[in-house]
Image (cartoon, rainbow, N blue to C red; front, side, top):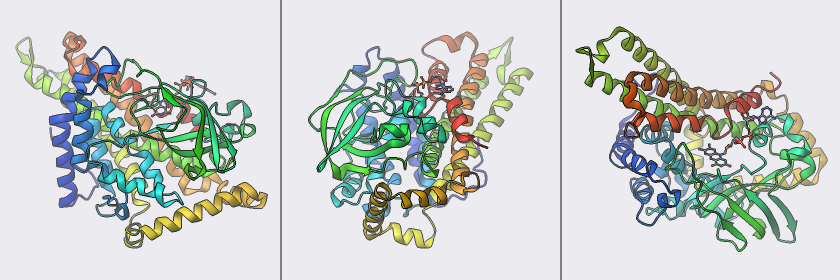
Length: 462
Ligand SMILES: Cc1cc2nc3c(=O)[nH]c(=O)nc-3n(C[C@H](O)[C@H](O)[C@H](O)COP(=O)(O)OP(=O)(O)OC[C@H]3O[C@@H](n4cnc5c(N)ncnc54)[C@H](O)[C@@H]3O)c2cc1C
């Protein structure tokens, strides 16, 4: 079925990128996802001969990972219009929700790295761009065995409660931080990642607000992983625990060393919105794939001698599915495009094309965090500047990111339920694509924050 790109200006280069991602999704990602989903032991998903590595390598060889990284580091951000990342995410979600998440989080530490004051760390972004084999794999390790939703609530004022303090602590000793604690088995790419964006507790008295963010190479002594997680949805996505036993982390890897900054103002909220808006795009893509499977089935199968697609109730059901998918897809695209456009425009494009900008950004942030840690007046100033949260535009967009994630994941699930009804008993066979899509969509409603908790955090105080 044809879909319009509503309100989206697509130039030739964007259309070519979308086509590359679509073909890669159809030829490599979708079949790999189906094969990996059927493996009973999650260790086989990451075995040396697994098709997972064809997905990683194919994604990198086609340069699809470059859309996350600014032009200054060899990436495509700033070289292509801001819609580029959105289109790649959407097509990956269309092919396989779990693998789409794996590809996206694989780049996160290298995206964060561009904000480091240290050249060595900033250069991770360049190395990631040049890695066409898929050797550099990132994860975003937030959730802990005792803290899932607490992190989401940490982006609101409720997160200052000391009972919510992270279990993984980072204690500063000279030029190092000593890391001790666990990240939960739900960390995506957890057992295969080489680098992590790591949320750690710096000051337990401030609850989740007392967190810092480190960029952690995962080959440091004292870091171990457990076996990959077995689960019901998104089985092709590798997940697993990361354990830190008195790990010495050089202080150059602590990107956000200021306890109290995370969550105490718009920062945490915007963070939540940006991450959630990517999830929205991915699962709007999956919802569209489910609709297309239902349409294909309805046009290929007859009941009582009449094509399913010509039965009145099926027609109505299909149209309602179409309307829901388009509503989710357009909210997701628009929200994601807004976040991606924040760094576009002629001046921004010029600035993000030069490494000097990132040197200045990294050093300015570092100086600010140092002052934030040291001087109460700076903390007060930051609070005053950012805490009229309801009128702050960044905060408003955070809310839209969450709305996009909730709408898209719930749409993906509802559309899979509707598709299941159209397929009838055929949908209950493990060989039917709908059964997997239903499981993948259900997991997405908890992933990146349980939808109810996200709604609470996003609407806090409104
Ligand atoms: C497929 C998938 C991928 C994931 N990837 C990652 C990843 O890459 N990195 C990572 O760090 N984590 C990841 N997660 C973990 C995910 O972020 C957490 O599962 C999520 O935040 C919810 O936490 P929880 O499962 O511990 O649920 P809980 O926090 O135990 O919550 C269970 C239920 O209780 C409700 N609840 C909890 N606290 C409150 C409260 N105070 N008030 C009201 N209701 C409450 C919640 O809304 C929820 O419905 C992933 C999860 C999935 C399913």
